[in-house]
Each structure stands twice: as C-alpha cells, then as structure tokens.
Image (cartoon, rainbow, N blue to C red; front, side, top):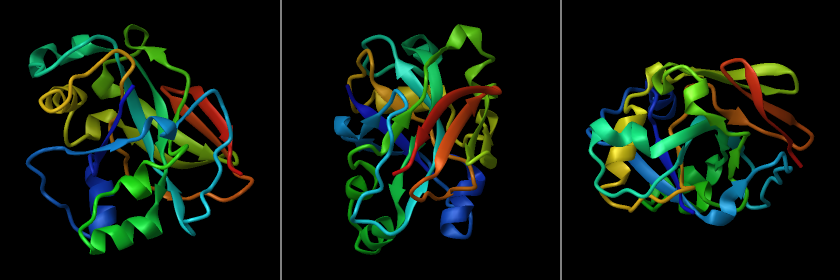
Length: 205
C-alpha cells in the first residue's frame, strides 16, 4: 500500500504558504511511509521533534484497481471510495527543510501523519469534483473546502501519478488542502465531515 499526497493544490492555500500564487505546470507530489497511516479513530500523538504540528484537511481517494500510465479520461475507473483525511505536517521542520532545498518526507511522512476517516463509495456521493468537506476542532469549524476549487482535478492527479508509479488496489491519494491550516494541541478532538456526514473523529495526545 502506497500513500501519495499533493502539495499546494488549492489556490488560497498556495497563497497562504507563499504570500502569492505559485504557478505550477504539474502537480507537486510527495509520498508518505505506510507507517504514516492512522485510521479507525486511533489517537494521534504529536511527535517530540516538532513544536508546530499542523493539520491539513483533505479529500482522500482509494485506488481500486491496478493501473499504470492511465489516460486521464479513464482515471475515474481507478478509484471507488473517498473520505476525509488529515495530512499532518511538522511545519517548523518543513521550513528548515525548504530553506536547505531538502525533501519533505521527514516533516510529512512520519508515523501517524496520514489520518483517514471512514471510506464512502463514490457512487453514493456527488461528483468527486463537487464535494464539500470540513474539519472541526473541539466543536468549532476551522477549515472548509470544496473540491471544485482544486488546481489539479482528481482525475488529472491519478493520471499524473500513474506515469511514475504503478497504482495498486488500496493505494491512497491525499488530494490537497484548502486555506485555513493550523496547529493542533494535546487534548484536541478532531472531526472531519464529507458532504455533511461525519466520517472522521479522533483525539490528539
């Protein structure tokens, strides 16, 4: 099982990170280790190596069949479930790595950093590019998104990733986060919603 993620795939978050819109000709793809996966409502433990661990709420798609070099027009056949997930980021470590031109894996791919909620079948939801999602922390909405605002659409992402990696059943793709990322703290309770349905709930320790 592989975990892929897309960086800066929403315009306002792109600006949030850079102060201005960074034009990209292709998706920014990074990976997470399989030990990053956290599911079934298990608690997230803030790593000792960061003083600024931030949530990034995303729609996550699950690959349902083997594929390589997938044409974009057929990409929708290669995922069958979606959910809300959290791409946890050690933001202070990310800044240090970016300043040195180093890869992101240490700040993005650490244990427990890829949280996913309960998967929902795509055929029971609106079009994948018309999904509303949000994150609540301690009962307050902190981040909201709409997949129509993606810079690179889900089918584009699936097709692009498959140029470099063979996609297999069970692989996950985190499709990017909208504006509004922020820190988590010990004792926080996080809840993720997809089209108004709660699909994710866990505690931070």
